Image (cartoon, rainbow over all chains, first blue to last red; front, side, top):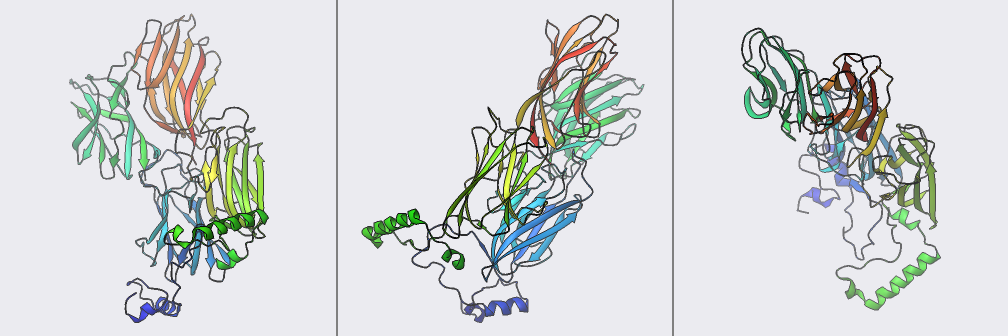
Length: 311
Length: 308
């Protein structure tokens, strides 16, 4: 344990814990017995995570990055609840209720009483939040605000009212796990002569369908709509393109989707086209609806973008 | 923890088992167990959950039908060394909603818990979503202090703690089901989706019989979101004239076409999810539909998950 005076105590504090109260408490703690006594108890017993004088509970819920399919409530309430085995052998039930706007997310940090953390549950008490919208990371750290690096990750995953998260027994998930959250976006009509750029605000966004109507002016020219993604107007990949050339003074509705072939739709002014399957765009990218041969009097209207998003 | 383990005693059968183990240990000697020996006295119970007097089992069930049936059973090793086995069967549900039940528990170590689907007959995955955990105190609305297990039990696969996992309602295959709709003559069909569900539309088949009234009908198929916005629409390549019967078949990744028997093939977007509730639906909007035109044999196949 080294030669510093503090090392004679039962608690070795991290170097960045400098609070006098924490140091004094550490000095006063008795030196524990060997962690590997012989004989060793049989496996089992109460699962417990030791909590010392500088252990804090930290919970972060990432805000919803973009639009989601559900009509999100203005605020949601999350209840973090846990059990702590105190040094006197008693069990304390703890609750940390918080209400927050889904668009703002949540951060809180709470100093824990010394003892053993037995279990933690995170329950969203507001219905109507689809899975994939709110990602929760809960763990232990040794300092208070602002958000700290975690010493232990206990909970990580998307939380909804029907899918609470817990430790132990839970599984740590990455933010990109799962099916994501259904997203429908209806951008405002960009106006005559303007194309559409939809910036991705979620961490990941997988477009599955893009639909719009193109009204062409009387200027004689062939127009061919296409959908691509990239940065700053530069196409990195074409998501989909039609094989049609739309003439002047006409109105066609285009339906790009995963799995569709390229073909004319005959007499009904619906034209289908494919977009690449399974492409996940990341925040900072932009999805563009472009039209080859686009004229100043042409207009894109009734735009709808569907996809799956990961906060 | 030492205080709690001292309080545990064993019944006669357990004591005899431990005694046999101890004799086996003595006969093998220390060397036979490698670097460590294991205590045979004051053994800690193989459980990570100690239940106090204010511990309650919280069971949440999302069923699609009132007559579904879910059974939860659990074992507790009480402080006097006795093994308590309990069981509760839940039914008479409110369909497509969270049904919550509380069970008072005996103080002691929770050793195991199992959730089985006790419906009669075959139950496919995705039908009944169940989660079980521990709450402190009997008040309704109390959150989980520990989540023990969650998932979709079927007639062949049960949920179990401690070996099982907490599986959320969106993971794995959903509940494959079919819906039908029979609109009146001259009306379009519309099939809505339950609130707080995520829907993956796999296929739709519908027949339109047109009357003798001369007009060209164009059926447009629309997907609506919870606010009634059209998120997708598609139409066949040809119109349907009077006195004809066409079958329209919509499916993922199909090619827009028709066969010689007037079966129309129409693509649906691949892997597009609809969030149920509100105005969310799949419907037909038939232009020039006549009073005696009739939609029939409307059959929808979807995959569904609970999501709220």
